[in-house]
Image (tube, rainbow, N blue to C red; front, side, top):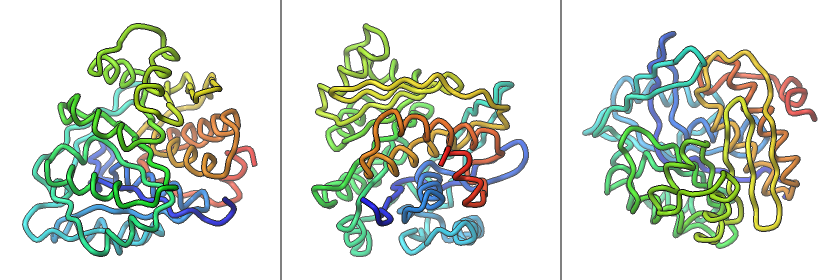
Length: 299
């Protein structure tokens, strides 16, 4: 693929309430923003409240270059928010408000048309915490073209996941991305929790007929495992401001290069570089000039 791919971040949009103030967040919005930076067409499919925070979220998305054409407005439920605690290593812990707008994603004609055009859909576990949104996300994935790439960026948060949710999501998945702690948690819930990271990744790959398992390790880099290859990256040493959005940057870079047929080693290098840069910035959607981005990615 040489032309921009249509890459959809499907799920939650919310305000991250950081110690430094509120910033727009939610993995799907972060993913869409990062794919735009990389030169693809990133689209957010989510839902905000018909309230001041929802209007502000849409305004900020537009300022970031993201279309809000597929961001639904909810007249009954408020825009999502999450308290974020940043530890001494820059790692975030989230406290996420419940019964908010993105818990009520709707199947609309507009979304049916969007899903039918998708090249890539990135979705997670959090937005599936409610039956309504879970059913909508499942229908969205079912309606994508056969060639579309489905990335399950697990993102376990609080108690908003279950074994059944993980199994169902993995049935629709081509690439699963999860951090090293999530790998242990997910494989334990699925009933195979013995072995090193590569062994566990290969069991996931085989059990759910995946194309790729991606394990991120924070400052220690990453592990990519396909049926016939393994690529490890030792990580990059950077001064972390906060790690919010770093995983979403990794997922965006992974998607961008995977659909273009790059090697696991090339994907691994670029994704680690991109994620490491985001970790040096405050918030999940830092701005950057195209030439600077190419320098960071080694291009």
